[in-house]
Amino acid sequence: MKKGAMASLVPLVVALLLCPSSSLAMASGAGPAQWGKKLDPHFYDQSCPHAQHIVASIVGKAHHQDPRMAASLLRLHFHDCFVKGCDASLLLDSSGSIVSEKRSNPNRDSARGFEVIDEIKAALEAACPATVSCADILALAARDSTVMTGGPGWIVPLGRRDSRGASVQGSNNDIPAPNNTLPTIITKFKLQGLDIVDLVALLGSHTIGDSRCTSFRQRLYNQTGNGLPDFTLDASYAAALRPRCPRSGGDQNLFFLDPVTPFKFDNQYYKNILAYRGLLSSDEVLLTGSGATADLVKLYAANQDIFFQHFARSIVKMGNISPLTGANGEIRKNCRRVNHA
Image 1 (cartoon, rainbow, N blue to C red):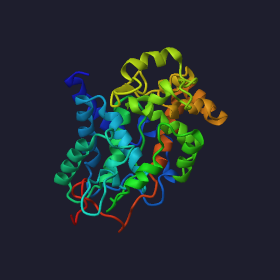
Image 2: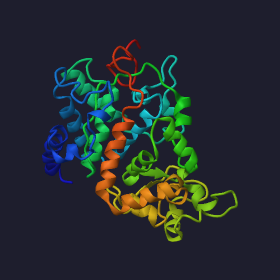
Image 3: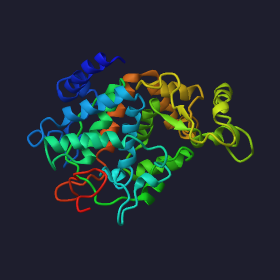
Image 4: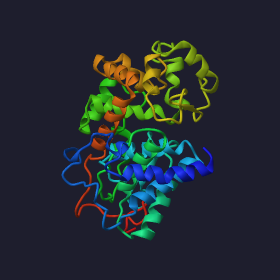
């Protein structure tokens, strides 16, 4: 995208995101009953009225500079909410008694976008000191990243506060892994209050972004310990992956999760799964592991509008996992450390 086009896009995106009457903002179908009892989309209307404009502008700039960043920011929100709730614990660096979640297996060498969050936080501190939480920044950045790549918009409930601790153990155990079985993934979602529709819809975020060779190598060479590739992986697709993902080495080589439209938030991910071209085992098992999840894959592959509606509702639901509100937690001045540090 050309620089001039990006400059004109950001105000448009902000307008669409913030106008309750816009078709984009209402596409989620998320009404007041789904906002939760404590979070409120108007939370900063008086205390920091330009907060959402500031976030969208910086996310837009980051997306223009690095097309991969949208997926990275969206992923940060997921990985934060699945550990201790949506409290920005993921953003804390190690210090004192805190062992950073950035060191966990799901985040080490792959979680990124922290500098963008830092830039957003600095701009918000300049505009409205000690007002907007890092947890809310993650929620807003995830929404803006989705919209800027062509996906649905939704009204973001706000008012989360930031945790004073992290859980590297929770990060290792609670976040679904690429090699988990479908029952394990379903259980991990269920423990967060998320159902099968939420699971299949939210994994649709893999329509953008990429994954490392180490996350799917076993599918190419030794899926079940018998030295054979995964029979649910299309043979021609596997052959195309092997040169840059050999039996050993190349662990950090990146591959698009959706090689057809890698930077566009659409329903191509589900079409790939139907063609047995889901990159991760956790992608393809949505088709092969359960009739209920397979039906949803087929539905979303056939109808992008329904996928968008379900995704928007489910991410609002995910964003309401155990938020800190009221006097709990704090509003960090720097997202990387607690205030007393």
